[in-house]
Length: 181
Image 1 (tube, helix red, strand yellow):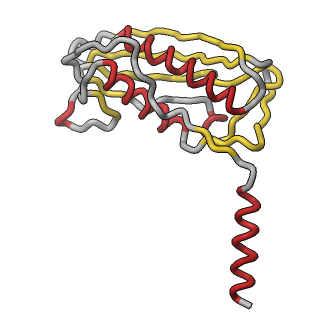
Image 2 (tube, rainbow, N blue to C red):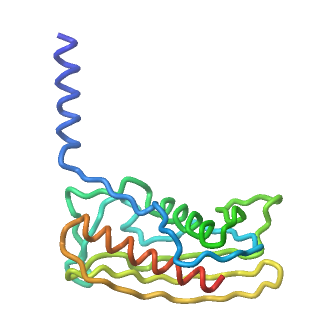
């Protein structure tokens, strides 16, 4: 009897997970050009819109309405994944291990702190939009440099296409941030 109950519970759990597809954006791209740097760079956690914290992949149906793609789920916390991806990309770009996430502690005081805030990252009317702003703060001189990024790319309504286009746009954003560094 116990075996039957356990088998039934397992079958129900499997059925409830069935049909879901999990997606990642944390795998960093390879930079177009590699440069050397002696800077120590600290990366704050990437800030994302509230709807992206829920692990669902959404599409906008209007300027004020979004819906869940029911079979598509982020396989990671997007803020953590994008933060790690940015760090990995910049490490490759500058061929340096001196790029790390907050908290960095007293032994790894960065020369530059990067704060990235994504304000829009969604598909609407078969177009993926990425809007973001970032701040680079020189910790030695207190000089601050800010910049904006806006880009879009056509897509289909399939989750895998939307995620692929999100990946392309985030790669462009990484390259732009690297130019400012």
